[in-house]
Length: 216
Image 1 (cartoon, rainbow, N blue to C red):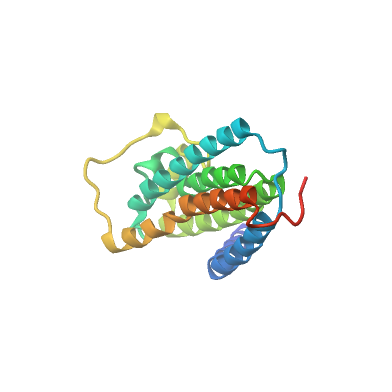
Image 2 (cartoon, one colour):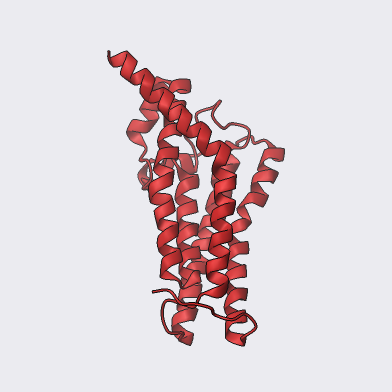
């Protein structure tokens, strides 16, 4: 009975993982278009003030930097090794899901620079509702592939909040340069979105793009 339940759980997780991979890009594009429309024609959630906006932009910029370099660091470790090898060094010695952690940090930065509470809330909801299912499905797959090695890794490495005491790294590490190059360009989306939002802000201030509605 236990084996049957375990099998059903794994099958369900595999299905979730398959669906998330198949539709993630389409879902992201739909969300991105809605996100852009909302920001392009809506006002801010609070009255504009130079120092307040500047402080928010600086904090958001720092978060975007952490996200960008953190994702590059994590991607370097899985380029050519993803799934087939169990990665436990570098950022993966701190936390089991560094890519999602750094993406969340970047998403918070994007939410802040949008200065729009609705957008900020939608971004957080996307991560808190959608990604736990993806993480669970991926970890089910890693458990199936790596067995006890993954169980041991899971027992000593937190899922999402880094444990810096467990940090370890090798002096030399081989990566797939072609895969890393592709991953490098995917990381540029975060700073690009940040710059687009700043341009939209200037367009609103100059009156070139009208504010059609405001949000709480």
